[in-house]
Length: 153
Image (tube, rainbow, N blue to C red; front, side, top):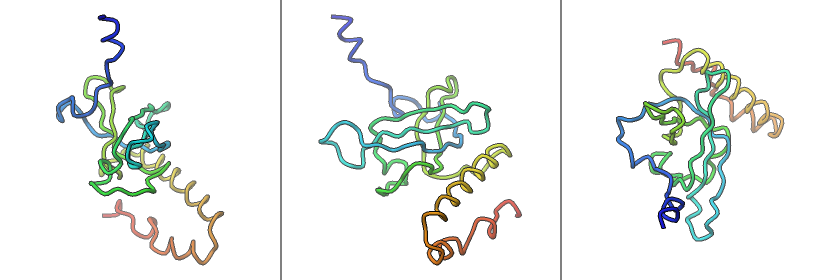
């Protein structure tokens, strides 16, 4: 009987902890996939992510059955996808315990994280440029990051 109860133990969720048990780090979404339950809402998905981007070998995490509106300020978008920057909540005492925070970029990135994200976004822009007609691409990048750098304050 004890073995049966132990095997039914579910994974802890973020709300099983105190908010003060966590700190934020920058992450990137690796992939977003529907969960296996066909009766769940289409906004309930499994999200795989990479965090500690400034390390030689970044860490990987996955959050299963995540309501996508939780990571986008209560707004659900169908197109949150691979490569989106995301804040990752990491446990103070065990960096292997992590959860998805909000979509976005930390205000306090270190130089290695900035280089990682710059390279990541440049790669995404190059891919977009190859797949998009010039007149559409030029309209999309009219107001670019290089023209509006926040680091020059």
